[in-house]
Image (cartoon, rainbow, N blue to C red; front, side, top):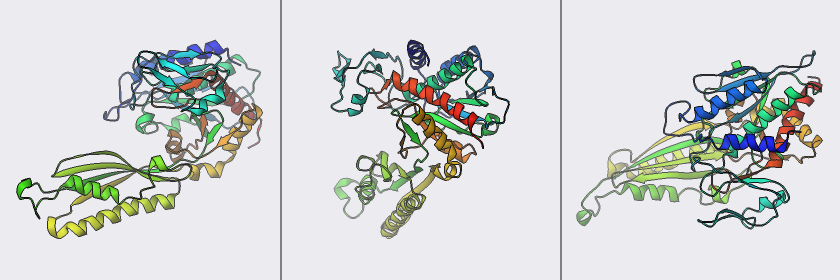
Length: 417
């Protein structure tokens, strides 16, 4: 397979370009700096020998590796995003390479005493003896999802250089703004022209996912009445305390920090206000569509109760509620074509990788793409501890993911559809 150093150099050349996205921006891409890596990728795709390399006005990149067989093979796609999360800075990333990891603590930053320790992040122990790329403790790494991009580019380069490996037509797509939930928004599925695709955006080696949350965002605005506190008895209504009361009535154990697997949750992620007005933002997540609908119904019922209770005193609705669906569980769109998951599973098994098939506790470009007509399960890209300073990726996982892409192409060309 690929030269290990070549892969490391490629990955580092991507993560050292700052591509942080911005949820408060209206443009696509949401930040100008995403163009820096996008333009670099376009040149690299041409250089490694891909055809039909395009970039549109929103920085969506597409390219083709033509089929090298004479029989009909479905067109498959591979998709990754080049932006990094705004949760933690992606400026001045200084990757550190730990060769032959010994299973102990990794000192990320001596001055600030920042340590990546297996006693806290026990996943590290499965990569003993491998080469690990970490941060310097002051930024995120950007393996989410520059590892995915590195894997796709490296796999395409390998296939170009090894024409003896037979494959059908392959399309690749790189998107901006996935981290702020907009990665698929302006993705032209028709232009992409694949029968199905895979996002290379999972975490640890072996992950294969075709289920994700159903998701909604909730905005609540609580009203109040401000009166001089010395003379407020029976008159003042403090909107902050109202909001607090509302939140306390949500199911206590159905929060992110107390749920796992298929368990859904309510998550209050922003609150700000004054006596007169308090705004609360929360997200609702559930794998089950039935339970997802029940969660939304519960919020609406609570809002109605509050409004009823305070109608007389306040003389108007005391709380306004807006619920917006964000994305849905792709399982519904992937299950009718389950062979696309089977192919990925078979590819992993042939490469001695144990497939870990589990639901995504989040969303993915793949869920939106699946509802746009491009069924799109998610495959590991190898990184851990995304969106923060403890992010790391084993180089061997990047190499393995690259091999999985090549193997999927190979298996698809041999199958009868």
